[in-house]
Amino acid sequence: MHSESDSPINPYAPPTEAADGIVVKPDSGGAGLKRLCIAQMIIIILALLAQMWEIETIVISGFVFSLIGLSITIVAYRRSRPYAVIAGGSAVGYALLLIVVINLNKWSPADAEYPVRIMSSLYSAAFVPLLAYCARGTPSPSLDR
Image (cartoon, rainbow, N blue to C red; front, side):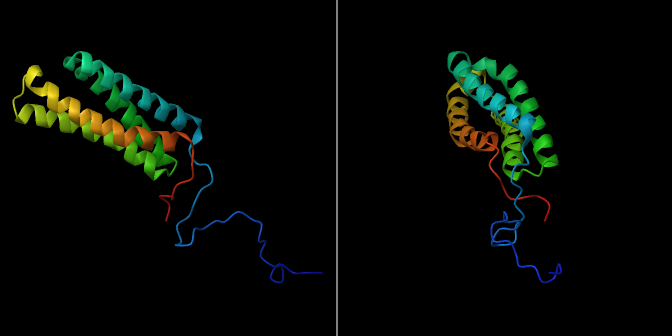
């Protein structure tokens, strides 16, 4: 009979630590986080299209965008998903950035039209792929070090 201390390590067991000591959780995303990330991607794309048509739509889309982003941040933090925390938090940060930039420069809707469209296009190009990655439920480093 073998005792527990004599048993060899199972080479077929899934790893519990990455090479650099970061704990990796196989699937800690959950369906709720996936739905929120997909909803945020859709909101970003629709908001970008809407502001190309009429810049003043950012007032409503920015509010919805921030609420979903805050929801993603809270859910992702509770599930130890740092990339989703970044993606969700960036939505709130970006909405606040737009408010500050527009108010500091005292832009009218006509003045804000071109710079806001450029900034929103760059934001979309950066964060839609990150949200897609987060929606896949791909393992990411844990926040539980």
